[in-house]
Amino acid sequence: MNREMLNRDELARKKRIKMILSIIRFLLIGIFLLIFMFPVYWIAIGAFKVEGEFYNFPPVFWPSQFSFENFERAFTMFNGTKGLVDSLIVAGANTVIVICFGVLLAYSMGRFKTGGDNLSFFVISLLFAPPVISAIPLFMIFRTLSMLDTYRVLYLSYILFNMPFGVWIMKGFFEDIPPGIEHAALLDGYSRWQAFRKYVLPLAVPGIAVTALFVFIFSWNEFLFALIFTRSSVETLTITLSGMIGGHQIHWGELSALSLVAILPGIILTLFFQKYLVRGLTFGAVKG
Amino acid sequence: MSKLQGNTAIQRSEHRFAIITALPGLIALIVLVAGPLLYMFFNSLFIKTLAAPIPPQFNWFGNYGKVLSDSRFWNAFKNTMIIMGVGIPVQAFLGLTIALLLSKPFPGSRVIVAMFLIPVMITPIVSGFQWKIILNQRFGPMNYLLGILIGMEPKSWLAEPFLAMVSILIMDTWQWTPFVTVVLLAGLSAIPKQVYEASSVDGSTMWGTLWRVTLPLLKPMFTLVVLLRIIFIFKIFDPVYILTGGGPGISTETLSLLTYITGFKNFNVGITSTLAVVQLIAMVIIAKLFMKLVMGRKER
Image 1 (cartoon, helix red, strand yellow):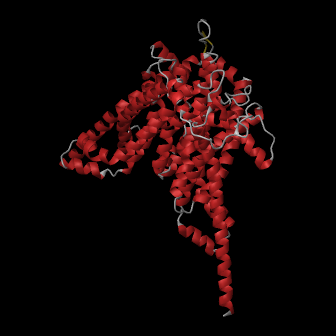
Image 2: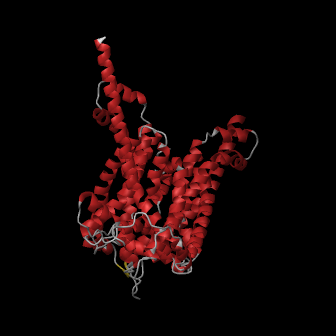
């Protein structure tokens, strides 16, 4: 009897501790979330502030009214439209090239171990090398070919970091597909090419699509090559943005509005493809 | 016999197919890489500039000696090392803390994890802008919040060398801690429940379990995340370029930034190429390490 009561007390105590711990846990999660979301919130809210509200102290945490003027001016007076269109062109073209060439190379490496460890090492070194390394030789070569300040120069040079990425990730996806599938197709009398196209490729489509999204975002976010290889006839969004802090005055409102537009694709990718994001960012080392 | 022949025929066709599929991508990569790389190495042996019409002058490995004895190079090296040496441990600690908090799933935890991940995919130059606004001495919310929370005097974050470095560390930690978190979360979810049960049967406390069971099992994930962070910090350019531009002075100049400035502000082709070769060698070593520690383990 006594022992049972003791047990009940003990149980109640344990339950209380558990509850307190879980309250602390959620409180901490909330605080961390607040801290990590704050900068994004600040850009988003800044996009709707009117000019004067940027020069208030204490800062304006919630604008008295939401204004769309910043977006309007960013797109009309600050070249935002050109930035957006050019970014779409460059990122789109680069994604198509990288995926078309990359899928084949990835399949070859994933299925046949083409090139063995040496090719793997080559690809991974390219992935890890700082882009600024290749900037000077590429600049001089592109200058000689008078390719500077064109769309071509950007979507071709982005191959340098996007292709290794795409190949590395898609190689993993192909490795996940059992080779028995092609063998069955080959026994059925299909050619090697047909076996690949009709049997393997459809299975790899989800992985390829997500890789394409990644490649697109990396091109979309790219700044250094765009800064070096273009002047005025091509201007991607990141260049438009950096131009906004160049002059005498920083146009915070317009800058925030255009920044919000720039980060939207990445945010959408993150929210919907979280599982693949981990895999992509660790270059396939974590399957997610 | 005929079966064997059939096999070699298939093998040969497989082999041909492997080469045909690999070629287009491989050629694209080699054209984009091998040419420029050789050209870069070639340039690193010359005194060569685009700033003045002086003919290039062969200098053997003179540029290398010059770079390795240049205090600005070592300053950039030191700054890059500081970002790694301070940033990575801080991010590992914070990342682990958040991962442990999130490790037991609860309703909506997936959405929360996804939200935590947003900083990772933010356009890098935008993250530079954000922090430039937030850390603004006069109007930024950072000084305001620190003022009301802990009564700190307003700081000129980006104008003082030490604080500018702190600012970069804050920005980098903000952007990459979530990455550490999700990698460690993946590691945590792979630890079988029985391991914890066994440990609690042994009468281990929460801390004991963390130290003796969880952390050792997470070691491979830590290796992975630290290596990847080293690689990413090596490359860091956009956000630093926007936030401090390497300043004040050269107090936050990183290796990438120094390479950019030498090449595209001073147009010194010879020295830039030398800097690039030096970084490339460092990178190849790290890539080798990555292959050995991370990829090698996976295959076994």
